[in-house]
Length: 427
Image (cartoon, rainbow, N blue to C red; front, side, top):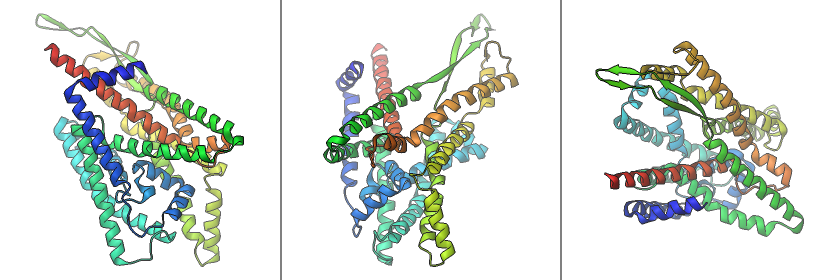
């Protein structure tokens, strides 16, 4: 903690870094102001009730930065942008031209970011229509009116473009990754109100449960920091090479393999799939046909978030998608080729196929630990409710994972800029 305050103090002394911090704070204030400008004609009490009963909408609210629950002009928030980023990432694995573009340095990254922006626009329109349809079926927005629909679509799509622009401003001129910081701001912005409500509503009998919930939350934060920073170091030796009168190589380094390679993305995939039966059941339950209505009620009963089968399926899906996404993002064959190209080798392992098999063996073992952790993070709200008795939680495991990741990433960004400043002074 002392090192953290020293870091902030040193960063504040630097005029350039101080200007970036102030710009980031100003953009966050603008974002929070926009997040409280509501769209007209929305029943917010019914909206809050719907969000309390639907984990999928609650997860979307987390990635919107807390704007969806208010149904503000930024209601969709960053969801379309995040979805577009994931789609482009997956397409990069499928299409070799995108993979080559990603390797072209700054130009390639800028082109890929441009594709993400282009894809964000149609996704915003599609998600706006879907959100309007869901809310209209629940009686939260008025019955279908063309002018109301057009107004909501244009406003929500424009809101997504604005918040995406604010995030890119932070990335370019501020501190850290702008998109991540806006999501962090949305989660953190709801904490004071949620804590106040929990404290005021907790009785003397629940005081122990409240303290237990705080202890669980603190333990989850510590575990998240530990797993997020944990790496498996694979030793790499480099053979000596003689070019002319100079000797190159002969040194040793490490290949750091993170325990949690996939981040929060497997949870997004898993919750999207596990809640599809609930969404289908909600529509079928209102059908006039008795058979369809019975099927819908069965789906709602079996896939109730409070039922064990839901949480077991959710847990297993998170583990499966963690392996799937890690396999997409981590290519042992390419890494083995890069190591061999630079004259490196793993001690005791022959280059080529044996190195690939060894890296596969290591990544499968550490991914298992990371997958179990993400699975626990995903069902943490249910586990905490069972232990403490609280029906609503201040923040779920996914929110804790996002907050911790963003804080660590931002601190590293500030440290890197301070090191660069010291290096410039030395020169």
